[in-house]
Length: 146
Image 1: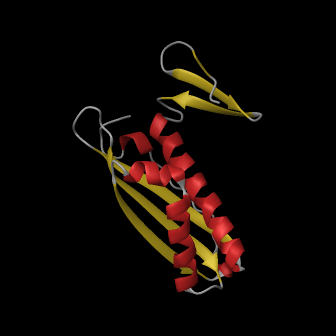
Image 2: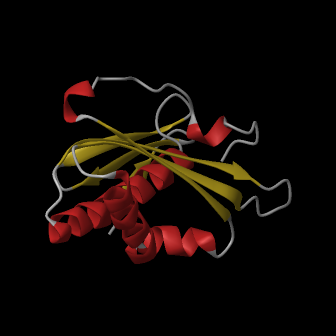
């Protein structure tokens, strides 16, 4: 269930599971949350798949982005997903788990009905993990807003 309080225009507070997300122009926008949900759904399925195969994954960086159509409604026409996996497993094993996760993630499957899916999977040694900040507004990547 989603419960969001909007006050004074497009300024919202989304409370779920003891967490609070702020929604608005200088905060999270709708596609920020959508892409985050896709990343979480996909990663959840990915962890199940690597666990089932007994693979060791020490971390994964996930980037989800989209390009929207020019027509109304401006649905996503291209969904891009990038997985950067820190593991000692083979690329083939990780790719197999990634593809299984794609097939089992209901959110990815829903978006595939309206969008072309582009994916990228990279692997790195577990010791190569770094903390990286990605800046940008998922709603305005194509200049069309949400």
